[in-house]
Length: 311
Ligand SMILES: NC(=O)c1ccc[n+]([C@@H]2O[C@H](COP(=O)([O-])OP(=O)(O)OC[C@H]3O[C@@H](n4cnc5c(N)ncnc54)[C@H](OP(=O)(O)O)[C@@H]3O)[C@@H](O)[C@H]2O)c1
Image (tube, rainbow, N blue to C red; front, side):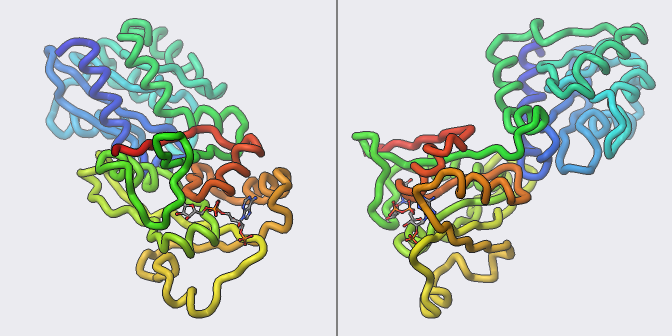
């Protein structure tokens, strides 16, 4: 298997952890013996073991001598004592022949430190520039939320829009014009965010469920989750009848529903202060044109996902 293929596999593995790894980065690792992958791992859940540990444990369970192996990771190994011991120590302890990593970590507690210690221990290092530039970019891209948060941003906000041929958002209630691939992507994005922001208008017009309706396998994830929901309103409120009838309030989804009234919808500061007061790091805005525009006007959008009509 080529170097690039092995690096690509670490990225594929990393993505399986995208539902529950946050606020940690997503990371994948493979262990190679005589050119073949003999063990794999990824970071599945915040607070649980890291990708390298999972891969090492899998190799040890097969009685593999790690001093004869190379290890590839999608992100440089951590060097600090967080919720788990540093992965750089693990790599040194098992005396791997070499370490290859596809992206650097901008986290000051980590950046370069683990690599330095591993190199000092006599283990050969392959830096990101050993790999295809597209893989390097992909490895950085898939952790962009983590990188922003570690550098001081409180939250990472994704705005999703479905637009027509003229670039305007659709506003026909309940109409889905963007095809199966987009639908699947929306469900994956939901699972990888902790909160969906919508509006009273969209909830009444579309009667959405905002749940994840694909299996983990179909979405390339180890776990799926229905995010909590924030419904923003200003002048209107739900009637008792609507609260009973609208799907969003069905307790079967097992999630928290927050409702909040914005006093002045033309004030970007009010929206920003309220959103920043929430204890959610990855937030998906999935609503109509007016509330979407308010997020854009308040310069709160980190990632914009546009699906355009397929016919
Ligand atoms: N194309 C897409 O991607 C997409 C996605 C979702 C929904 N939709 C469609 O969008 C339509 C609804 O769009 P819309 O523009 O009427 O409504 P919207 O953008 O979903 O929501 C606007 C409402 O949100 C409340 N709000 C609270 N804070 C706000 C703020 N800071 N800025 C703006 N609004 C705030 C206000 O509720 P009050 O009424 O209480 O004042 C306001 O009327 C639906 O028909 C739905 O089908 C399209």
